[in-house]
Structure formats: C-alpha cells, structure tokens
Image (cartoon, rainbow, N blue to C red; front, side, top):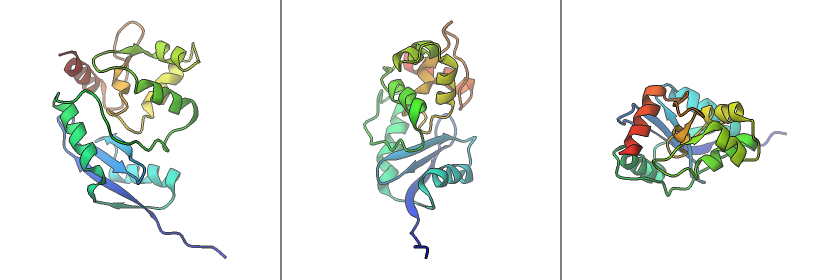
Length: 172
C-alpha cells in the first residue's frame, strides 16, 4: 500500500531586474533558489522536485522580503542579506564552498584557490569553480566575488558581463 503525500508548496516568483529576469523560490525553511533568466520555470521546478519531491509552485508572501532585498542589492542600496536560506539543493563539498563564499565581504573578492584552501581542500580550485557553477541561490550567495588567481573574473552562470557588472557595482 502506497501512502499518497501532498506536494510541497513552494513559493515561486519571476522578478525583473537590471541584470535580467530572476526566478525565485522559497520553502517553509527559506529562500531555496535564485536562478538567472537562462533557467526556465520548468527547469527550476525540475530541480526542486529532484530534491524535495513533488512540488506545487504557488504565489505568496514568502518571497516578499527576498524580492525586496535582491532589488535593493542590485540598486546599490544593500550590501548583505538577512533572509533565511534553505540549502537543501546543495550538499557536501559544494555546500562547504557556498557557506564559505557567504563570508566574502561586499566589495571584496577571493580567488578560487583561496576559497579551496579556506574549506580545507587546497589545490581544489577547479572543484570550487564547479561548486560555484551549481550555486542554487545566486547573488545572495555571492559567487560573483570569486575570481581567478590572476585577478581575471572567470566564468559565471549569469554570464561574464553580469559578473563584471556586479563586481563594478560593488567597487563603487
């Protein structure tokens, strides 16, 4: 006998921003996903379903604070975030990298190698890059602040133009 379970209600919203549309999702635990416009609603839903099980996307107030804080950040009015996060879309080494990335102060950068050493895996700079590429909560977890050891910006899920723009915004 199989017991039917109801789907997890996940708050979902698409937000227009100066860097393009963003897809936001939140669970009862907190903000679980911020994706660039290169991801579709269907891709976000599939990712959430893979980890959380059956999901139902709903529009509710759970994303009000996250939406406001992201918009303030992108307009230069905010330098950090104080919203609860749900990090279930990542685990292990990747989770360690993203947790450490959250400690990089606004306006500063760290190299992939420095971050690898900080999480106890010196020499794992490429793995740090991979962890950043899978960052489920872009902007709020500031992987855009992680650069190559020579100071060049490296790759970014939102595109190198977006990464350069975010770094310039934080410098001013």
